[in-house]
Image 1 (cartoon, rainbow, N blue to C red):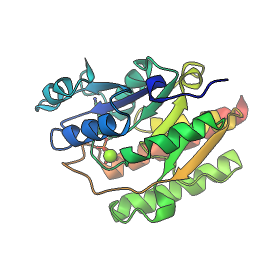
Image 2 (cartoon, rainbow, N blue to C red):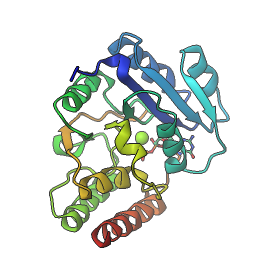
Image 3 (cartoon, helix red, strand yellow):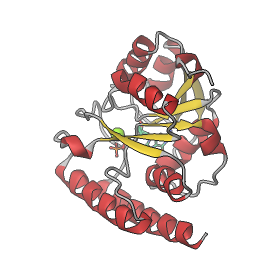
Length: 227
Ligand SMILES: Nc1nc2c(ncn2[C@@H]2O[C@H](COP(=O)(O)OP(=O)(O)O)[C@@H](O)[C@H]2O)c(=O)[nH]1
Ligand SMILES: [Mg+2]
């Protein structure tokens, strides 16, 4: 079988008032992939984010703000290539690692997840970091194998895997996108990544968001066990 190249890659993201970051993120994707990846943004902004995205050649799908997972699920459905990468549009994730994500897919992985926590993630707010370690511990116990970062925004998926599973979570979608494939026997790999300081303000509340994510992990973990 021939190997996937950047021509086979779609990069998708939700964007919500990310005008401080979107230019850099899209420029990085363009530079790293030689402009060959397709890029789609599901946008709920009231600032200049969608204009900047269009200027930079991204496809923009407009959506009322309904939360992280609603946006990312729509963005994944917009993927028009056999490999899809998600990222946050806040300049925290290392687009220069896209070749490593694609290489792992070409090596046989179905899902490649960017693990921020193993390298310390010092730039992550302390409360979020603690929460993420806790989520990883709970998820590992539920699925019976060690997972290190359940809520990372940067992953690569074979598009067929995304299409073959029904997704139900919103704020906890990131965890669901890791746990369901893992429980169903797909080749899921974590690779360590660096995590940068956010450009612009987050729209997710860490306390209510954290509670929702914990709920998603428990619900998805139990559902998968009972399947
Ligand atoms: N379209 C859309 N994007 C969203 C929504 N909520 C969050 N996002 C985007 O989803 C990504 C993750 O959110 P972020 O604020 O970075 O969360 P954090 O990483 O937990 O701080 C960012 O690119 C946001 O712009 C939403 O309701 N609609
Ligand atoms: Mg983020």
